[in-house]
Length: 358
Image (cartoon, rainbow, N blue to C red; front, side):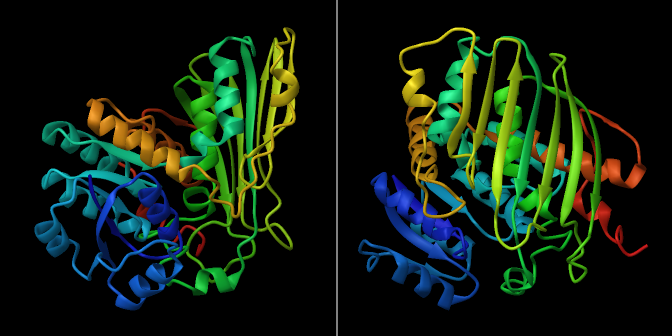
């Protein structure tokens, strides 16, 4: 399977390593700044001498005719590039968020369906061993009826992080901590609660990063169709470094707490029924070298299998849209100071422009 990558910045190495591990034929790398491609190639522990470099992704698609492309550019370009790939019958793995507006997300889903290609949104933490174990327990009804849940992403991002790229923290190209850092945890919350969200009440603030357009802290309460409620907390204001990404799930038959820096550790694993594997699972710690975790390779494998088997990938366009919808609903709730009923329509991150300048 012929593979290419568009966007050679911070997260790109995870995509290339996953592509190589899954034996993809890496035919092209594209970035507007050629030096970014060279830096990325130098990070690889495998031969990339035969991989062509491009500044124009259209030219790369025309010349290389890839079967699968990763889009790892700034978030505001995701929808535009994905649209072009899909219209040229290329399957796409899109870094989160899949788009910056709910309408663009739906457009990509509809377009992929009409062109018979697959979309996978890169919420790789679903493949964390702790998350896989929790999903299995929930599917086996070990948690019972879910009462409530909570996701907390308590990280640190200082000015040097934002200075690395001018698009960071802008409404058009990035959004704030909820859209960039917390959306992975929001995806896990939706995935494990396993019910449609029906209302969102949220608030965001810009407390410490007044050189940005967007928020550095956001909180929300989400109501679900199955009666469960959940809280969301996302911030980059934790001193002096990343603290945790922690997910709690409370049922009438059990409690699960997944912690660590990126939901990679089981911290509480208690149920009314006990199984032999619980002793091992309750001590599960998945070592990671960074907050991105180890899930990219398994996400790539699932996408490759989905293409070959003509099925939906685990994290398809609809899944990507649901996580995006929660973030945009929190933004809209901030503007209106009222709860937002889902489904959300006609809202974009750019509707927040000037929100913190009043």
